[in-house]
Amino acid sequence: MERQNRLVVCSENEALAEYMLSKWQEMADKKPKGISKNIEKTLTKAYSNVCNSKNPVKTLKEFSQIKGVGKWILKLMQGYFDIGSGSSEPEDVTKKKKQRKQTLCSTKELCSICFTDHTLQVNTLHVLSCT
Image (tube, rainbow, N blue to C red):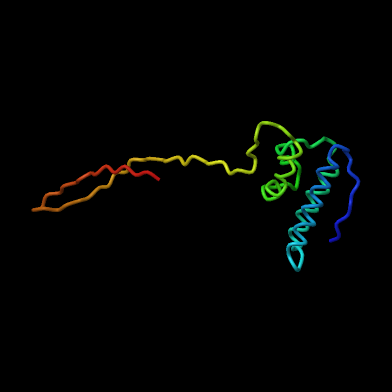
C-alpha cells in the first residue's frame, strides 16, 4: 500500500494526521523490509478515519474513540498528545485496568457410607469450596 496525503476534513486534525504519517514513515525506516501488510492496513484505517473525522481530536481519549484506533496505535501516538495538547491532567487510556477477581464460594456435602458390624453409618462432611 502506498501512503498518501489525504484531505483532512477538520483542519484542526491536520497536525495529528501529519504526526501519524511521520510515525508511519519512522516505523518503515526502522525495518529493512518495511512494515508488514497487517500493520500497514491498521495504520491506513486509523489514518483515513482521522482524516475523515468531522470533529477535532484534541485529547488521547477523543483519539481512542476513532474507529481503527486501538491500544497499540494509542501507545504509538502518545507523544503527540503529550506535546500537542498541553493539558495538565494525564490520561491513562492506554493502561490496562485491573479487574477484581470474584470468588464464588459454595458449600458441598460429601457423604460417606460405612458398614460396620451390619450397621449402616452415614457421615456427612460439609466442605467449603471457593472457585
